[in-house]
Image (cartoon, rainbow, N blue to C red):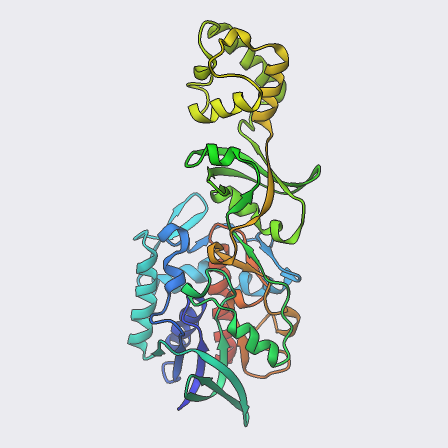
Length: 408
């Protein structure tokens, strides 16, 4: 089966590349080979099902990898404007919540549907339940082997992602293994944008409670990463957008801890004064109700117990030493980190194919002509907030234009 372009992987990057190629050059034959029964399965899960499709503030500071400079060209050339134009042309206008862009439908499924509908209308041939097992050089092109089928092609685009999401989302790392056998280097793979497991049983006591806090991932006194936002306490540790934002460093650095500042806009001295004043106002109450109206009730009770107080005691039993201790806990609720919940729960893979092996202006292999890799399979990952999907769109359009012979 002779094809101009074989795209391995029917996820965000693969679908975007296929549609972009056929829009620009309808005469091309383009096939997508997808291992799962349907395309776009991982994309459906993004943004809590709403698909945070990109971000107004795309910056290199929001990307990571051993050579993050690699992604500069694609992100700048195929930017927010280019992305918005592409999606407008397939029926998906954007709406914004702050800097985050979403489809107007607020449904990730509709993004998958519009990409799939357009691909089919343009004549992209989609093979599902078709797992690629090898890529062989064939003359001046390639033979892509999938199950018992062989597809001859001039151009191959690998868009299979890494390990994030696990096998249920088709992310088993098999394409990375194929690339390794072909001589490509792969950097260390770790889960990113993922929940963090902690040793402290405080999180179990607070299971289900959400708070806004300044989240700091620390190694000793050094702050490795910091973010402000929602934190969710769980029976295994901590979750929520701000926790997942700092999680990348957990797998790359041992002996880390999470510090939550529950009142980041109030300094320690001012907070002590607030607690002292509250003591005066509530002197006749039990400590069980001391933080009612100021903090989540159960959170406040756990803080008091952590400070060594009994909830059945009167507020008047709280001395100055306890006031200081309570304030310090509020400003630095400490959790020893023991790991993450792993690739199966991760939104993205940190690490991937070493980008020094690819041309940053085309996504083409330096040594293997007409072999392209795009999206998460490369050693580029972004922060939470639409940055990883933007990399998928940008790298896909970049590779497609190279195949089309567009001047760089």
